[in-house]
Image (cartoon, rainbow, N blue to C red):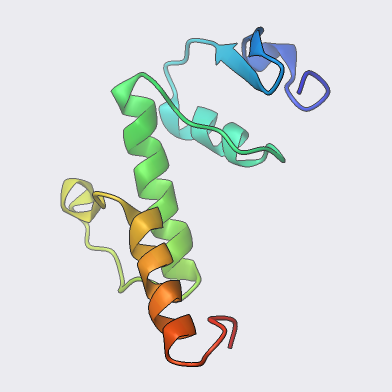
Length: 104
């Protein structure tokens, strides 16, 4: 993990063999979230809530870009999804059940 994360993003802390924690602070959650999205690894944002909110908005933007969501409104608080990944997974399951692969 250390080869993918520049020191300016924070300090890495090993949790166990398969997990590493990134400890950091930022006053620019949107910028920081974009940096995290560029990482070739799965991750979960624990806190702060501002960073989680930034990630939710970016996820919605990416899902929209992929044709999975309608055009977002100007009210970002109304655009936050409760669980966009679960919604996407449910859509894929429905596609597969109908005989389609979900990759049309």
